[in-house]
Image (tube, rainbow, N blue to C red; front, side, top):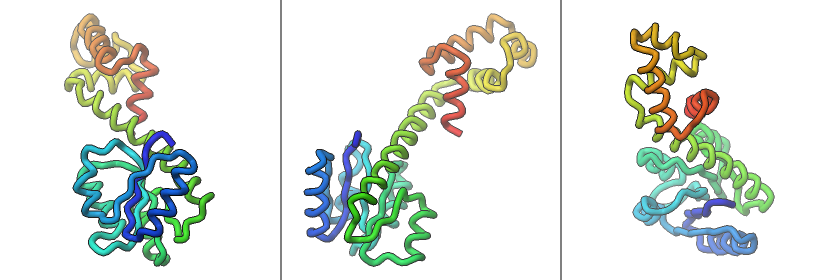
Length: 195
């Protein structure tokens, strides 16, 4: 795994057992017995995969997920529970969890869920990076980028926006520099990535 696992579960036996499993596979794991403690410490932590108990005394796993979303933390979540039912499972998936596992957690299912979480995290981080880069563009640069992505050439853009060809080319050069791209294809890939 490229990123650490953050395990939030009030059951010490579950935390210890999963820690031993992760350590055997050389997966970094950070444990929390209390979701409130996790929330107090989450901001400086590097991105990772969240393994959350569904039912905890102060906050449920789903309540914790809602709080993380409100803080714009986009890490993938795997819910684990010893008391799952169909409604809880449905609610978890509706709120965007990667997987919902019953305790005792099956090792194979856990690693499959972590692989899904890894893919989801990579996609989310790439999207966030692209959004950050696109936010640096001016209104006019965004306008030109949208037209380029629709297949318009510089002459067509100049005519449609009533600006000179030279100005269009200057904007395109600025877009390339800000986005770190060198071709129209890369422009298009970046725009598609955030949609």
